[in-house]
Image 1 (cartoon, rainbow, N blue to C red):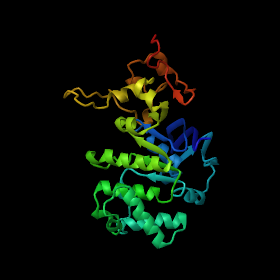
Image 2: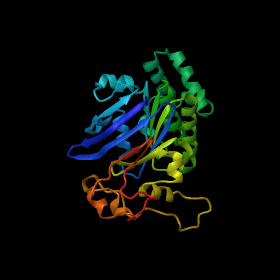
Image 3: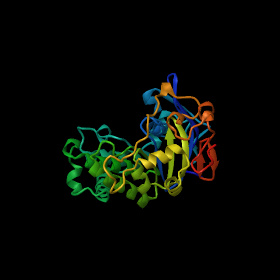
Image 4: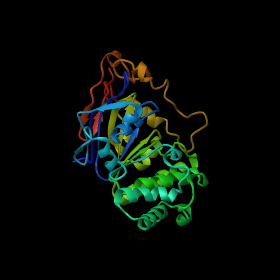
Length: 320
C-alpha cells in the first residue's frame, strides 16, 4: 500500500478550478519529484496534500486522498494539527516565512520535538543540536542560540529542514525549497535534504521546476501542466525516453556543460492563466505535435504500471 495515495484531486478557489483531477502515489522511502513551469499547480498540490487550502480559501475534492491508510478528506482541523509536523512535514520556498524572527532558531526546532514527541526542554535541545550537526551546520550548539537574521539564507533553510525532521515524520513535502537561495547554495541544500530522507527511509515529495535537480534526486517524476497531470514514470524512462511533448521540452531546456552561448533552449509561449485554459489538451497551443483533435478533446490519462500518460500523439508514436 502506498504511503500517500491521491486520486482525481481537484482544487477550486472561488469560481475557478486551477487543479483538475490529478492522481499519483508516493511509497515509503520514495522520492517523487513534481515538476512543471510556474502556474502548473505544483504548490496547490502540496497545499492540498498538507490540508492547507483553507488558508487561501481553496477547497479540495478527490475520489481518494489517504496517508498511511487514513482518509484525509474528512479530517477536522484538530486532526490535521496532530498529523502535520508529526507524520507529515512541509518545507516551504522561503525560509524567512517559516521562522519566527524573535525566537532563537534552535528553540524553534526544539518546539517541534516538545509538541509532537513530548520531550522535555533538555532532551529537545540535545536532539536539535544533533539534527543540526547531521545537516552540516558548523558549531551547531552556538547556532542553536542565534536568531534568523544572524544566519545566511542557506543556513536558515537547513534550520527549516531540521524543523521538518525533528519529529521523525514519514513524509516531507518540499515546495521549491531552494527558490529563495543563491544558485551556488541550491545544489548543496538539495543534496543535504535528499541524504537526510534516504538515511531515515522517509518519503519525499520534491516540488521543483529544476529538471537537473530531478535527474539527480528523484526516483519517480510527475509532470504537471496548467493544472493537469500529463505524465508520470520512473526517473530513468522520463529522461531517457520522455513520451509527452511537454516533458521532452522541459528536459531539452536543461543547460548542458560546454553548451555554446546563445543555444539555451526555451519553450515558446507560456503557461495559460487559470481564466484562460484552452479546450482539449491545455498544452496544444505550444505543442509542435498538435493536431485538430488536441484542441477538441481532453486526452485521457492512461496508466501502464507505475507510468501514466495523457497525450493524443506521444513522442515515439506514429504522428498522423
